[in-house]
Image (cartoon, rainbow, N blue to C red; front, side, top):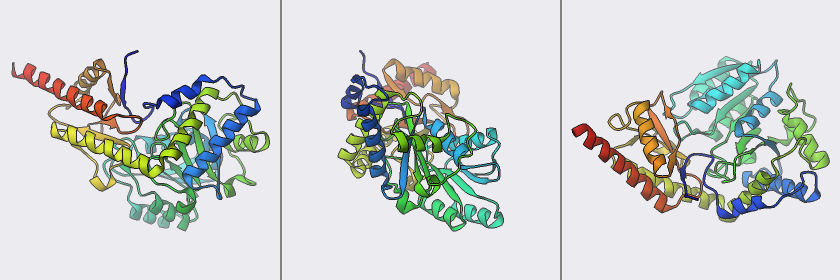
Amino acid sequence: MQERYLFTPGPLSLSSTVRDSMRLDLASRDSAFKQVTQQLRDRLLLVSGGQASHSTVPIQGSGTFAMEAALVTFTGKRDKVLVCINGIYGERIAKILAKSGINFEALRFPATLPIDVATIERMANLDEGFTHICFVHCETTTGIVNPVRSLVETGRRHGLVTIVDAMSSFGGLPIDVEVDGIDVLVSSGNKCIEAPAGVAFALISNRLLVGGVSHASSYCLDILDQWQNFEQYGEWRTTPPTHVVQAFNKALEELLEEGLVSRNRRYCRIRDKILSGMTALGFETVVPQDCQSPICLAFRSAEFVPDKPAFESYYDHLAANDVYIYAKLHDQTGTFRIGCIGQIEDAWIDKLIGVTAEYFDISHSILAA
């Protein structure tokens, strides 16, 4: 089978050992699989620093499933949510709340700048009706990192429950749910944990869980009920993706072996190599350097990729050479994304840069003719 070089910010390239861990068939109600599930839950707490303060609740589906589950379980009709938005995934939180009939107010910031903490502080002072605050830690629209600790501190100062989308940051950026004071953190296995897609999770403060009340009107998305079932029976309520759970658990083992600091360093090195190669070809980034994550890079070029047809042509050329970046152009910023996470090798980056240079040399030749 021809190798494909994935530069997508999840799903991403997996290690051979994570792939191999899916070869074993386990019965979903058997004690062996229950042990895998519990190990996965414990390892997520180790990575997050929440062993003494939080519980892990895995849920079947993409990260959005877990995000919606957390929102509809822990926010009710009498609540008011402050949603801080500087990209696509913050907008998705607002869309979920709107469809669920939950009262919220959205504060929007440019996708190329981090969420402004002072503005959030002013809004919280002006409106004492807010009960929750939601935001994205690393907004993969551009790869920008938002100031998680300052935003959580602001929320806690005003008595707000904090719900953090850490989809693309967990396992790749430093975060500690107990030290940072996060009430609910939501993420997925198929980003920096480097597991296959199919299982997401929430790390939830024990004070919200013990004696907590669920507002969910959906059985599948009732994350409190999911937690209670894990605690009582050690089982998933409905059929879990057993092979993906095993791979997720193996990926967590490898993350703990590598260490969060080392994984972050690896991603930073990949980011810097991609950044160096692409900027040398004439592309520019849109995020301030001190807010640029090692998760993904957003590039633009008015000369090479001025519009969607130009990007689609470039994307098709990359794909024809087995190189895959994120397949959409972001309209508001005119950028395309290249992921820096997963089992990316230096030779892959050389190929990405080489194929990109080749394509635009060809394009220039055609235009000159």
